[in-house]
Image (tube, rainbow, N blue to C red):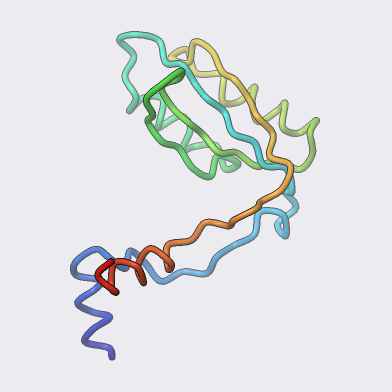
Length: 122
């Protein structure tokens, strides 16, 4: 069994061994998604470095469509969310943002069903 796990890790299928932490249990029950528009010529790397320095930013993706980056943030309350958004927007490379507050998590982040589907050869 260990050899199989080692092979999966070597192939990048298993990306780490860590606990799944709950932001709500850590006192941050509010989740929001920010769509950011990046100023031309600034580059995503500089903005990403800024976002990575903010503890409440828990995920960032470069996207297509209406915005340039999608950011998931957490906060202690709706009022605290304003503080987090203000901190995100401090970077001069961010031209505009749109925020959507999550009301409830319907399907948590998961990969196991995909892995089982791929392993079954479907």
